[in-house]
Structures are given as structure tokens and as C-alpha cells.
Length: 394
Image 1 (cartoon, helix red, strand yellow):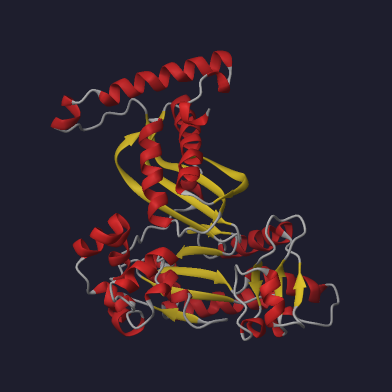
Image 2 (spheres, one colour):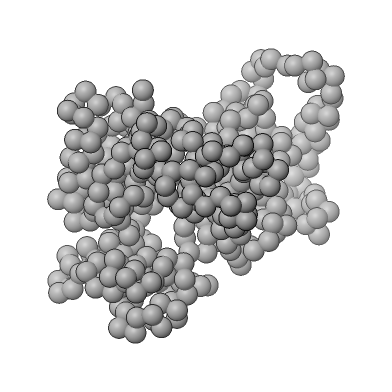
């Protein structure tokens, strides 16, 4: 059985700012007073990016407007974000974790998955290993983390979100009913605001309610996202930690948007441009992808990503686009988006043999699409990227 850790820095932006201030002689600790990170004058949104535990006692939440936060707590202390500082602290943390194992998958600036399986023999138990890592992080860097432990990434992430800060929690499959099913359905990973509203209308209020529903019924109301949420509620998730080495073999592209995307139509246009870019780069490299992931960064810098194993390796723009739109639909919770990205991985050579079904042999659409993609690539190489545009972009 795999043993996966999800390591999440507690209130990362605020914690890292607090540690840096204390290093520089400040006589306050932002973590111990009502304080927030947010309101960057250069940002397009004055929102709360992180808050202290004392700030949360006033009802202040990540993502809400700074003006609302000050109405709730007039004596609130606010510091502007420093993303260069956050990258430095994140890099130091990941370097430290690599001293334990190379089997590490960083999923955002302040969280990662660590495959503990290969080093489990060095510790009396996974909990002992997690406690050592957690305590050494605090001693070395001065900030705290939560560590969730399970046999797959989904349950490890759910466990790390239990009581905070500076805690270690387990959530193995046999613990799901006791520890997870009693939680509100809004606490389930990937259960966005619109999905939760739909579930409540169906009288589904807890994760346990969702887990015991018929997945076919959920698909009628939430399409494929409904089945995915049902699988998550029952603890079904990926146990494979994708290491940095494997990730580097992928080809991807992302774009920070000039203004927030707020509609599905706008998002699809961005995804189509990204799919064309990724497809062209794959073809130029003579590669096809067996795995595709889509990343969303929301207006408040929160990042979500989701990946899918493809039925058939591809470097077709439209294949990549269709898969990306499907993944996007499963993730997006209607909040404004400031960045979208598509990444391909598990690459194989373009001319690698593949097993075709009877349906593949009968249908020539994919061959037509391949020839079209190659023709467009040739035109763009000769006359520039903008020589051919899709009608929807005009």
C-alpha cells in the first residue's frame, strides 16, 4: 500500500511575512494578532489573500474584499503581498523536503505531496515520520505546516485540512466514515460553490450523504463532475505522486490574463489558444501526450489543477482542447480566473506504435485533423504565428 503525505503551509503568505518581519527585528508576530495579507496597490483586486487565526475569529475569510475585512475588524493590520519572498520560502521548503525523498510533487507555492512509501522503513510509523518532518520545518524555518497522511492523494489532502495549525492527521480508507462523512459537503475537495448549491437542492448536505447516493443520479444533475464528487466522497483518488523529474518531461503553456475571465465562453477561447500552442509544441518535438492537466489560478491566487489519463496518445489541437474543456468544467466553481494553463505529460514518440480499435480503423477524421494541423504548422513557421486565425478569434 502507498503512503502519501500532503504537506500544506499554514496561512503561508501571512506566516512567511511574519517570519521575515521577526528576522528583521519587528516586535510583533502577525500570526498572533488580527492581520491579513492583501490590498496590493498593483493588484486588480483588493482582496484578502491570507489571514491570521485572530482575524478569522472576526469572520474574515480568504478571498473577501479588504474593505469588508476592515468593517469586521477596524484595528486589523494589513501587509501587501510579496510574491518574490514567497517563492524564496517555497523553494527552501521544497529543498528541505527533498533531503527526505525525491518522490515529491509540488502542486502550488505552499503545498506538495510526498510519497512516504520508500522511506517508511526508517520510522516507527507514518505518523512518527510526519511529526519529525513537521517539527523540523518549524525549528529550521519558523513557520508551521499541517500534514495529512493516507494511501492516496485525495484523502491525504482532505486530512491536511482537518484541525489547524501545526497538526498531523490520518485519513485512511477505513477512517472515511468516522472522519470525513460527517463533514459538510462543501468541505469535499473540488466541491465548488455552484456544485454545493445543486447538491443542497437534492437534500445532500454532508459528504456521507453524497457518498451514499447513486452516481447515475448525480450525473443527471452534475454530469461527469457529479460522478467525480461521488468517487471523492468514497475516498477514491490517485495514489501516484508525479515527481518533478517526470513533470519536466511534459510540454505545457499558461497565460496570466489581462482581465479576469468570468464566463465559460471566455475561458474556452483561452483554452483553445493554449491547446493550439501545446499541440504545436508537441508536434515540433515529435511527441504525443498520454496525460493532460489543466490549471486554474483564481483572482485571489488560489490554484486548482486536475489531470486525466487519455484514452489515446495525441498531439492534435482539437483533442487537447476537448479534454481541457472537460477538465475545466469539472473544476471551475464560477469564481473569476486570472490564469489558465494546459500541460501535457507521459509523452511518447509521435511514430510510436499504438493499438487501434475497430472504430479507429473505420474513422478517418483523426487523419484529416492531423494533416490540417501539419498544414497550419507549416504556414505559421513560414509566415508567422498570426497568419491563420480561427473565426471565433476575429
